Amino acid sequence: MAKETGSAHAADGDQSPVAEDSNAEEPTLPVASVARRLGVAPSTLRTWDRRYGLGPSGHTDGRHRRYGPADIARLELMQRALLRGASTAEAARYALEQVPRSADAQPPPETVEEPEHPEHTLAARTSLRIEVANGEVVLPESDVHVPSPRFTEAPESSRLARGLSAASLAMDVRSVTRLLTEAIATKGVLTAWDEVIEPVLAALAARWRSLRSGAEAEYLLAECVFAALARATPIHAEPRNERPVLLGCAPQERDSLPMYVLSAALAERRIFTELFGVPLPRDVLAAAVGRSLPAAVIIWAQRPSATDPNLFVRLSRGRQRCRWFACGPGWKAAELPSTVELLDNLPATVDRLEFVLLGSRTTVPAGSE
Image 1 (cartoon, one colour):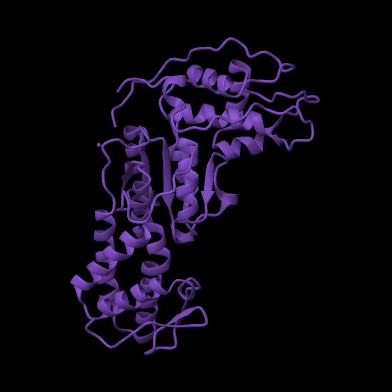
Image 2 (cartoon, helix red, strand yellow):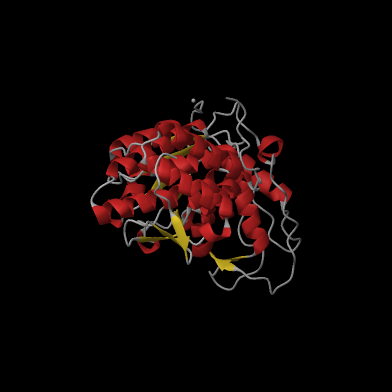
């Protein structure tokens, strides 16, 4: 794979920020905050400042460095160029070309070429219905209520959810498959998951816990969802990202279905992923990261008991240029390393990842690839 250089390729899809304003009242951030935002160590920012002139543009008192909006925009452009394969010096030149420093700032030092690492090539027969009351999904056979406020706002989602629940309880695989395909095709992966699939899975699980029966319906639906998401995850001949996004679960996590949702949702935006749906041992996951050289790694955890913040320390050994993300309710921000960004939910993860990698957001019509 030919190495991608700064101005020729790194700018593809980016909208160049405007040159920085000299307004002294613009909000500024300290080194630690900028480092966390970019997912790098503070020492990396200091190195980029010393070698390439990508530090704060304004004057600072003493040793306190504060980055303005233009400084941060410049660093984000550099990072996107790095994630696309440019060398550090090329990425720095590109960022400075796109967002020039103010005239009163110190001129950048002569960039220092760093040795490059070898490049790697990337590869309805039942009468049971779900009823909606006061924004909740209610199963008539039990007193279990599963919160789902979106249902009352989306009648079509409610229809699909009722049919999907009925078909699952009837063990009607063909109807389940048809309804899942219809939901994904008409609403897109994320909306279908939030408004149709996840509420029905939760309702079936709640019914099973309450009545101690019907677990087979939940398992059947889960298997059909896996298959539907796989069909909705095409391998694009020309993805927008050249290095993959690696998706995996914490080694002790058993609920990997949200990672299949994320992979399919990224595929809708033509972002290529490498998905490990089966939880891998820590050493195996580290080997996968080392060999894939991904642009970003996302580790999912549903349960707090499955999380281990030291996992990221083990995975990030080496000099991979990579962004690290923890996703799912199991993670706690206070326990994560400073280079790991916590993402709250799947829609936010898709939007954030697209911005980090490509600098732009693509609105994909429901059902399109």
